[in-house]
Length: 464
Image 1 (cartoon, one colour):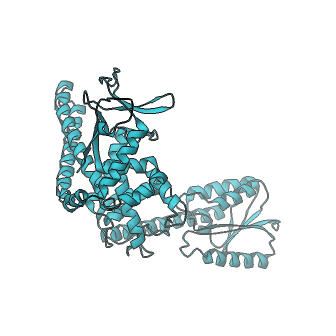
Image 2 (cartoon, helix red, strand yellow):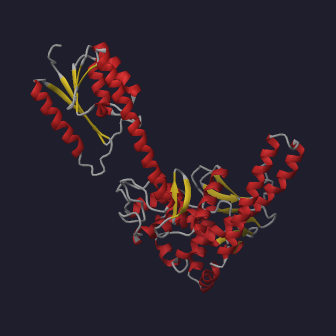
Image 3 (cartoon, helix red, strand yellow):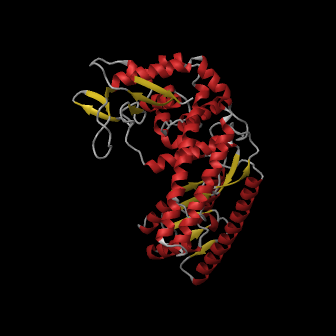
């Protein structure tokens, strides 16, 4: 065979936890030495660091080298060992086909040469790839078993990034970040969206664990992580308690999951424009007041249309009503009544646990009912007759859970009314609404006696 004109050196290592690429550097040094000994001119070096050849994930530099071989730009390949080139038999066949079409036959390693143009050379390459694939499979199984064992023991998993709320050892709680985690959980349960919370944390300059800016996906990742409740998950399933201390309670985690489910079922995605949406009642018919705009004025009205079926007899200026109720809420947070509420609030925890268990039982019955219907064990009439009361019970439980969830936000609100008032204008509308809902159940708007705004028309009904 003629001497190569433009050789390619390829180096790869599947794991590089240090990030220093020392393994591939050693491969490159040996390959350069081999090229110099043979007098093969090296046209380019291709390096895939920290990329497995067995997993099937993309190897950008390998693909670039293969394209150069296909285009006739490389007529030889040097690797430290054949398993650095590939550990998958199917990938070897692709490399062989490309090489044969391009006329490449020189494949050299630190231990032996491979002639892909001969039957014996191709046979040996295939055996090498098959053995490497089996070794990789065994190694992967050992790693999976070790990961499963660590999870069952509650030990932290691998990964380069530390979890938010914990130190680099992934076990020790970071007090400052733990406080932010509790704030995120409380605000989300109280009704704020992940997007609004992320925006607020960005504006306050609160750092993330990795240094990137806060996003709604970052917030959801923290909220849905079993880790913050002291639970160990593996492959998407909770396998037991973890060795690290929890940042939030199991009950709070369940509240987060319930809140998420309620938001998903409601399907609400439109941005909030009115602070008191859903919180005002008509003083005549008792129906809800709905947000409505008229020319340049925002209003809350009792709509008599077919969709709302109200009496149409109540209307109040939105800006004035919102300003008055916000002031009343912030004032109430600093009153002795709210201190008394906070003292007795934690007695509701047992009630929340009971309701959550009741909700789970109702959902199990709904699922069992659906299975019976799908298998033809009950008729459509029987299914509907059994389903409707279950749905009514489930709705009632959800309403009670929602009300209890709203009160969990009080821990960091009570006694801080004046401070919240100072920063009220800088808050997002969702943040403001979450604070209002933590204190106000609803407010009744009485009929007007004049064209002027009268605060006496608004009669608040406090949550606690």
